[in-house]
Image (cartoon, rainbow, N blue to C red; front, top):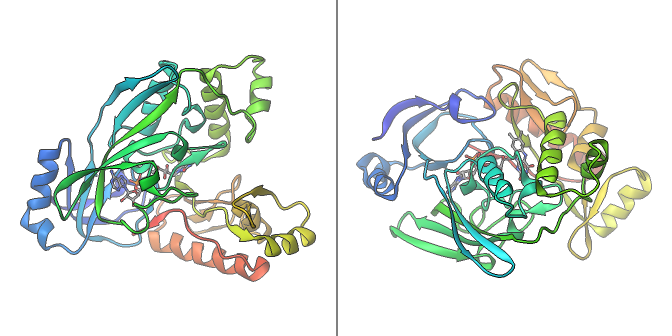
Length: 338
Ligand SMILES: Cc1cc2nc3c(=O)[nH]c(=O)nc-3n(C[C@H](O)[C@H](O)[C@H](O)COP(=O)(O)OP(=O)(O)OC[C@H]3O[C@@H](n4cnc5c(N)ncnc54)[C@H](O)[C@@H]3O)c2cc1C
């Protein structure tokens, strides 16, 4: 049942107050289809599918329908000599899913522990952390075509994954509701400890032969020490993507700033750290009223209490302008703006 004028405050990790004209949650396809058939949904010019609300910034009320995906469940659907195939429904909490896999010794997702949000959003922006992206593990995405009222399966290559990108965020934006995602997980772990501080964290814990549970625990400890907990300080994680820039611009910037962190990208390009660029422009720890730039990680914009989405958006504009001015690099937002 659609409810009217519902506050979205409990449904977004930035903890922004904004109302949805109509709101409902669905737990099965029949409920989803009846909500889509409702005359208010049919006549509305905005339909927004909500997961855990950890990658959105609400800059105004939603003058339309918000449908919260609460399809939950995890199933082992197949296995072969080397892999387990696990399907998770879109409304399943991401970390609950990762923990379930780790506890069953299904390897591959351990580096992605503690990312907020739900499974359904994971292919949207090809979530990633500590050297792993979901594009390396997803075999199939099942999604509902809103206009044509049919379920369609997408293979990994159909999803056109890129760095924080997929077809669902680009050409098919707003056309599909993701229902479930299937992952191919390894029977024999292929540990990835090279990225970030995982190695040091394992040494500090005295672990010489880590298993996937040790990796997950290390990632959880690192994330807890570095990132603000949305339950305490409103945020949506990295607000901007790390820019991928042409080699000639990279070489010019690197010669002027030898300490600038950078990572390999596609041929002819380099990825540079957005957080470092923002910090060099003096934004780290900045605060105006309740909108700020986190004091430990400049890439994370924060709501210290009652910041509005507009205040945070304006702050992001000012950051983009100053980084462009100083480095000739245009930052792109990772967070979805509503
Ligand atoms: C503290 C913190 C740390 C974070 N760290 C990381 C990180 O390390 N790596 C990373 O990649 N991200 C990170 N994020 C961002 C965020 O957690 C991910 O993008 C996550 O996948 C968002 O999931 P969600 O369910 O909250 O999506 P939402 O915010 O609810 O939605 C995000 C987008 O996906 C769409 N969407 C959601 N579900 C569906 C669906 N079922 N069908 C169709 N469209 C849908 C929405 O319409 C919206 O456009 C972090 C966020 C926070 C707050």
